[in-house]
Length: 312
Ligand code: ATP
Ligand code: RIB
Image: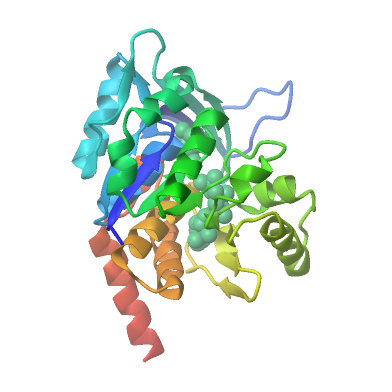
């Protein structure tokens, strides 16, 4: 299998506002600070792959503006090949407003801007990247037609397709579910997509199995501080997270997905790849921001070494 990872997805400029408690509707609260960081689920996942040593290219759209240029610089600094990105002549780079509370939990509003121009035709014109890669990584902040096309093309070419269904729409087309090797929802996304409000482990497994019945090969549910649950139709296995003090969970899921893709592309066994993804994501939650929080390979290797020593 090619070691190449192709991420097709969104790129945003994040504006993060930190406060102790989220404002309720109609309420005003005082915040602790405002930060501008590079974000967007596609860009974050590509950046995670690059920092962790993956061979990664990204397809997506930014505006012809300062945010777009800064995004390209940030990706290139992380080792991501961003030469296939489209710069929209008419729409601005996507933006996201992120509220982060004292527990590190967040609420996000995305204004897609140029991400809307990541369409099927644009992807068709860059088919060499689909042929080059071994893994296609997708999320849901670009038009559905693009997600569907990328998954279809990936499957046609025999590539592994990872779909992080975030943000989750009310439903995913059955055709799309049938094209996915790894679906990686968090609990909220799983509940929405399956129609089963997951409360405990039994509900989570039932919800994941419902998506497997619709054609997904494996569902890997991210469970925040509890780690991740793999359900593949035959087995179910929980991979506990490393215990850390969470400061800001923004991009934890992105880090998990990027790390998973990187590990699988390198040929790591699935078990090992999920543990690697948990470790990488546990580092991301200890730091503020999206791309600014993503770890490099050395940091994760150091943790893996510590873990091996403890279990020896
Ligand atoms: P976000 O949308 O905030 O980026 P998410 O909801 O997509 O995140 P989560 O399930 O919260 O994703 O987290 C993804 C992964 O990050 C988890 O599977 C786990 O590996 C790691 N993680 C998240 N929160 C914690 C935590 N508090 N402690 C340790 N690891 C964590
Ligand atoms: O997953 C985190 C990301 O979601 C942020 O960077 C924000 O841009 C939104 O896309």
